[in-house]
Length: 167
Image (tube, rainbow, N blue to C red; front, side, top):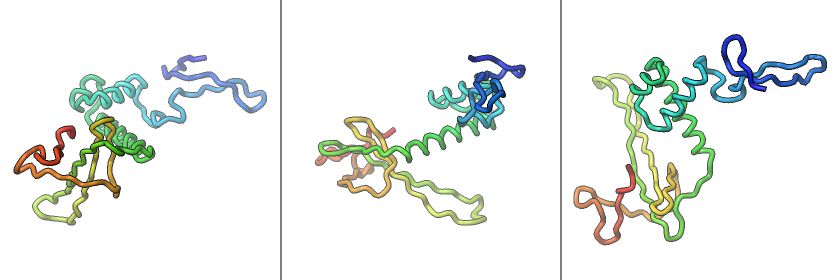
């Protein structure tokens, strides 16, 4: 049975396993990543939707009526959850007869006014299968490497290699 308690939070009445205890109120958020937030469930769902719909943080702040810091923290949490799920899933991209576009990004942390610690470059590789549209973060995988020199052309005239699918 679904009810709302005195604070207005949605809860479930569940039987207690201890004898003679009766029923206990359990929040719908219990056991989920939503349990640690003080935001009302409505705003939590809105922020999740805005992240999935790729709505900019400034617009999400206005629409959900929360602070910029809250939106920033929720978007960071959503990115972390997506990253964890991608690393957990063992998806294979490509295969025989498939073309996979791979792009490399260099992530650098620049120090202001050349002060402080030097940070090493971090290179990230991502790939997208042209046929299935599956994408994957690439580590050390065996693949036939073709590259395009974008200074000369955007599509290799001999092999047809291009990175137009990568946004």
